[in-house]
Image (cartoon, rainbow, N blue to C red; front, side, top):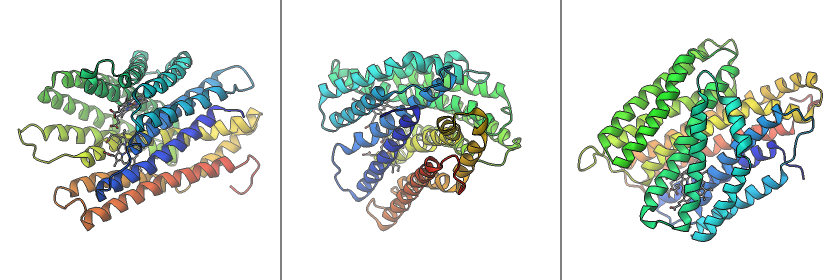
Length: 424
Ligand code: HEM
Ligand code: HEM
């Protein structure tokens, strides 16, 4: 068995699909009031985040390293692939059955595997993402956040300092999701969007200011969490809203100047930017809800999930799907056609294929994610088990499943398309 970067990307997407089904089960369970098994939560969360996002990031970096290497024959990463996936499954199993020490050991193995690729990953991040909009030190900081977040994740289950567990958990989540994933997501959009639209970014300076504001805002938010100062956090929220508004305006202006017709990659990256703005606006309003002693709107798990999934599906998953739609044709062509000159027609054929019905995954996922917010808001005026809330839940879950399944179908179709296949 030969495992290439593509194997990591496909397995990562597979984990994401499995986790999405777990998400649908959690959603339906929450609304119907059905008690769910404890293992479902880690299957959903760490399945999507470690098996999915972390593995996809690793696959993307390995693909970029293979492209930049002089060696004609691409390296195989079979041992890394197998051990990464076994360690992820073990981590999820142990989290699900609350096996503290074993969870820590599985985490340690995962962390070791990430460290074994750290030098390559850091070099590739710098080389592929640093530029006028993203200073190198921002990437260094994000990479530091990844390593710090993972270290805390490994330390938590050993229960060394139980009185700080809640703080450690918050730090683990925010370092990995905001410090690393979101910052890298913004850098990927800044880097890929101009390439996809074949035009320079409308303003590199605005791009750079947005990146700096996001870094400053997230560091200040961390300070706000530690000092528990709500008014300060809301002020930072307002700054981040402004930054996200400039970010999306800059992206739209770039799109408007593009000579290219629309594409799946461009659509996913633009919508991701829009969802980042929605997330920050919603987060700031959720904070404002606690300004008075008794919050105006009661907030439960469903409201929290609706909010977090604007970032998790609306932003992060869309960035991943945009990057896959853009990078996969070239990756497959390099795999399947040895002569560089003959690759162009195949890349165009695959890109055309991925662009077909591109509205389906986009609309399914976007409306499905917004649907979560609609369901959560409905619970303020309707009982959880009411027909209206249940109907909205099934519609939302259905849209999300259609969105994920449509992208999976296109991916399978592209993989099955051989270079000389005339049917495309
Ligand atoms: C079909 C898509 C999805 C649905 C319907 C869904 C649904 C849900 C629900 C209902 C919860 C709350 C569970 C509870 O409180 O017991 C949840 C939690 C969570 N989900 Fe998802 N999810 C989906 C996709 C994703 C994806 C793609 C990711 C990551 C990239 C993700 C990451 C998380 C995380 C980290 C939590 C725990 C924190 C929180 O409650 O927000 N989910 N999900
Ligand atoms: C070495 C790998 C990792 C280990 C050992 C680990 C460990 C843990 C532990 C012990 C918890 C607390 C569970 C609880 O209190 O019920 C947790 C929660 C969480 N972790 Fe990780 N983690 C790892 C990787 C990641 C990554 C890469 C991400 C994001 C990109 C992530 C995001 C989260 C989130 C969002 C939660 C909250 C989930 C929830 O509310 O159920 N973790 N992790």
